[in-house]
Image (cartoon, rainbow, N blue to C red; front, side):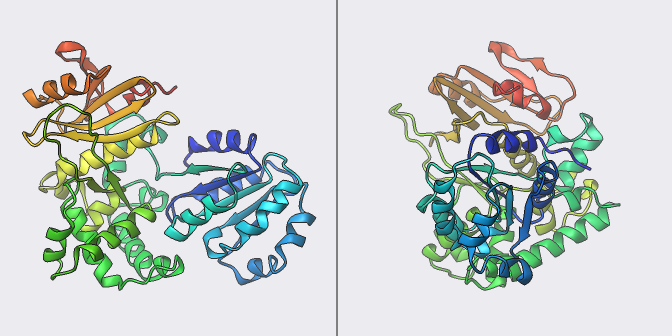
Length: 386
């Protein structure tokens, strides 16, 4: 069993807020985590809203919630019954005891709009990402396996590479044909699949809706932008926005787009094992996206993440702003990484408090100018997290 670091944060949130909404893509482990938390709460009620029998118990939600005021109520796949949010508000106001409701949702545009409408000040939000490097042993074999297979538990824990690859291919098909329809998305599965596969080929590149539309058979740029929004809402793609300091330089203003789970990148591109991955042109971009997800998951509360690039080519892969501190991270797929002049220029442009190079290494070591080369497991310390 994988011990998720998010469990401690979830328990903490539940000790402070009447309701917590745990967001994450399908099959990422939300239900397992919620049931582990509920097991420590006597009388906890767990409903899976994909089941007709469980949905029937909420035919009169006001009566159901009032009956279970003294117990934790867990509602899984809450986006399937978005009307529950309006019923939760008066119930929470009637008894604002912390830890009353734990809601689980596979993110969608509809759910994200609902969460901001009626429960402001009554609910806390927490995202559960796929399994992280810090939740695995600190050795090269475990890191390579996680990078290749991705962080969905059933893929990561599969008995062999073939079974893991097959699970991810099946997941992609099920997500496109079933899950998106349940979220209310009305896009042809094959069209969205082609777009998603194209984004895997373009992992980490700047988003150009018009060029993508042409590559996809002449789609309008507005349609391509809608596809992007759909997969960002579903937590399958990350849109990394540029940092735009006022420097008097021409800055790149387009976002970069990443398939968030590295295992899905590889499945979309037909990469089934490490030998195929290490010889594939996507290997560097795949590693970069993998590291960015580790950074995003370790951000301190309130921190902002982006990237920096000028029209002249000066670039920093990741820029993190938190309070008065600004940190830079350059990602390199090399055990002996080197950086370009543009890296040092970016440090000066952004007036960084610290800069790091993240590489697949076992032990951190210094570069000149106070820059340190670190491994993935060194990211929380670099970000100021315990």
